[in-house]
Amino acid sequence: ALINMNDQVRACIDKLAGDVRDRDVRFEVAELPSVRADATFIQLALFNLLANAVKFTSQQETAVIRISAEERGDEHVFHVADNGVGFNMDYVHKLFGVFQRLHRMEDFQGTGIGLANVRRIVERHGGRAWAESVPGQGATFSFSIPKELPV
Image (cartoon, rainbow, N blue to C red; front, side, top):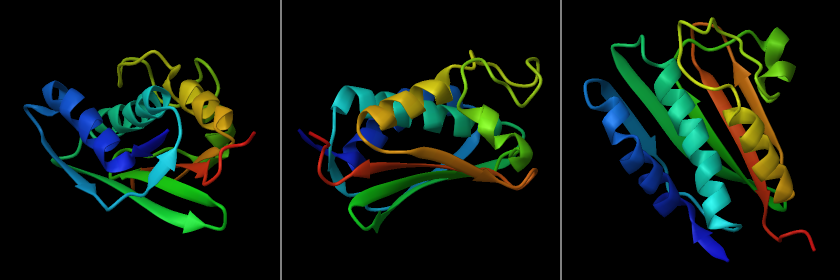
């Protein structure tokens, strides 16, 4: 089905309302394209990325989380960027593994399976997931969804 990604993101932000209640968290959402995908799974992937951004900006006075998209050839690429703690790119290959953590358990809550799920969901749709960061300067998590679903 063709799903409206702006609606998906809004639903995720609504779900996160309780987590951001006592904080200054700004979601900046660009106009996003619609994609052919499984709405339930894509929302789960988006929710994982947005929840991570909320979690890893918890030490910022004002958290800014930007959701944007671009077209690259035959795919749509989505980005979730934050101004949180970031991570060291030397360990980026571990990020999407199950139970891999780049931060001490006591610093940030969570199960460690979120990003593994994101990658599985995106790959099931024929896309890719990746991340870029500078420690202390936030992180950007990106994923692609082909414009045409693989047969």
